[in-house]
Length: 205
Ligand SMILES: Nc1ncnc2c1ncn2[C@@H]1O[C@H](COP(=O)(O)OP(=O)(O)OP(=O)(O)O)[C@@H](O)[C@H]1O
Ligand SMILES: O=C(O)c1ccc[n+]([C@@H]2O[C@H](COP(=O)([O-])O)[C@@H](O)[C@H]2O)c1
Image 1: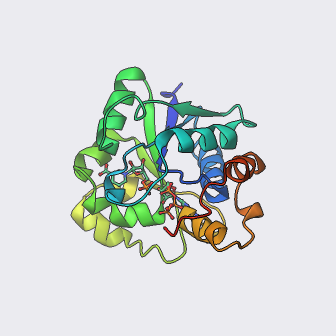
Image 2: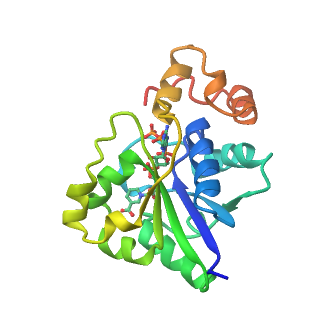
């Protein structure tokens, strides 16, 4: 029997939406992940200076998004340490927690495209058994170029088969602020929280 496979899905989740849920569910199935840890990132490295809702607000929404799926778990590995939250530190902490497991880091195509700008990307790639990637419209992924920067990367990239989804948290925030319908872009429980609390109505980001 091989090592247990654990998926790590980090995100700002401001708010969590159907793109996130579909990526997580397809990756779990296609990569045979025994556990799938959703890692809420309080202080995302690439969103410094950007307005994001407080971690407690995003946590409530992630809990609502995960509530009806026992296969999804919330990990506090970033919530419980000060930021900025680099993926490499997270993977290393989870390696300590699950020393026998193969860890798969899940990202969208835009994140794969940006990987060279991440903190110590070569070490991150080395630390992961694989990267589960769901393409995004216009993500600009050029795997041959990435392979030239990080030899061996392409063998670790597993493209997750799924429809291309033009859904983004930023787009949902804009829709809410503009009074446009957004109901079917995210789970009902997340929408209920947004409506009860009036979140995103005044926001322009
Ligand atoms: N529609 C989507 N298809 C594929 N991957 C996605 C999609 N939406 C988000 N992701 C991936 O999920 C991870 C977390 O994304 P994040 O929480 O930043 O959401 P986002 O929709 O990209 O937010 P924003 O629009 O505010 O930048 C990232 O790796 C991102 O690439
Ligand atoms: O480690 C890094 O340098 C790094 C740079 C950009 C993003 N990440 C992580 O990737 C995940 C998705 O990022 P984001 O900004 O699209 O929500 C989130 O968990 C971030 O902490 C990590």
